[in-house]
Image 1 (cartoon, rainbow, N blue to C red):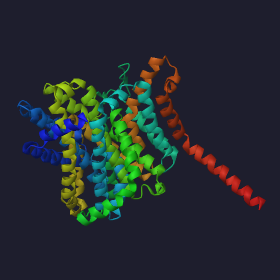
Image 2 (image 1 turned 135 degrees about the horizontal axis):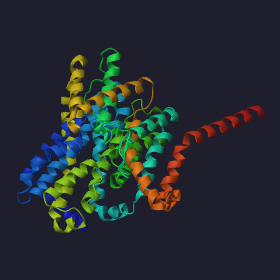
Image 3 (image 1 turned 120 degrees about the vertical axis):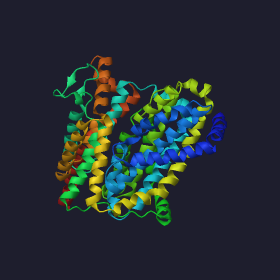
Image 4 (image 1 turned 60 degrees about the vertical axis):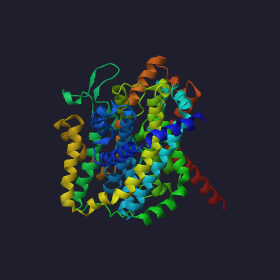
Length: 511
């Protein structure tokens, strides 16, 4: 149990008063960053990274610096759920799936239960991922090394097909929305050939459409436009989060233990691969909807629909640090920023880091346990402050949200062009909602479309165009087969219904 001895040493490092103060400061800053649409954990950590330079130059200061930045990361993960549930505006990309049931729950007057479920599930997902990092780091890192382009593409394909096979509405509308997302994801420089695609002479489109700008427009602006059309009545329900609501919700959550376990596993896998927190939350939501006895009610305000994406997102966000520490490969954009911080401080991530800087590594791992406990306490006690925003009339709060969204969009690249793009995406989101087309598949394709394309083309280059590369071993073959099964699941379901109907009719005729 060498890991336990190392972990105890890490707690001795992390439990100093100075580091505890940094944890609280980081969590509070992170929650504020997570609540503000468009700012995001990666941007927040990047903006605050210079604050750690002088800190890291002190003896033992690198551990304090990584504790501050990682706690900002945990806080942003927690904070993203608040606006998703209260305002239907995802504070973070991985919080999109939380809006599907979190916002309807708030509209039903159960905002407190939705928030408690989200925060508690986030804590559970993070705890499972930290335990994984503590005890399974060498084995999991070795497993991740087996992934090549075919395996990466098969994982992306599984994510897309899961959304088609498990969509609650028309699968054709889901596919149409996803195709539009792929088209938007294709804009910009081709990373394989270096050629420009669909930029139409606009220099700003060389890097394609930024996901954060699209999300702010599609969800934030689109929702505000729809609310204005419906009579300037803000849809956010009153949020009441006191100890009684928390305890009542905690009593309800154990019955979703299967969803928590499954979502934690999906999140950890997607964090290590690295698929990221966003596809992990979508996949877990889809799996929960498919496997739950109340799956048909998902989207109407189910606690289980909040538990699944939040558990997976935190598990993925936390486990993304595993390949960063052991291999120097960041599992998420925020992990990439943290990796940059380590390099700036003079540390070289990799297996040798566990030997040469054991205090740093195990101090960080111990702070993951403590930081998430601190985060749970802070969000459960401070949410009423955010809920008070709901008492402000919509005529006042709508312009404030618009300004925050515009600032968030502008700060991505410091460009007014992004603000105009945000407004265009806002109109698109409004039209999608009016025509009852799902936004989530569009967003998913926009996020993962270029990555999936890169993996597919790299796999084809490696196999000289042979599609059997996606069945070349048991791992990639299983994932690809499962993907195809989910893609055609709507047709399979229709065929099964027809067969059952004929059997029933034949039975009635015989009687």
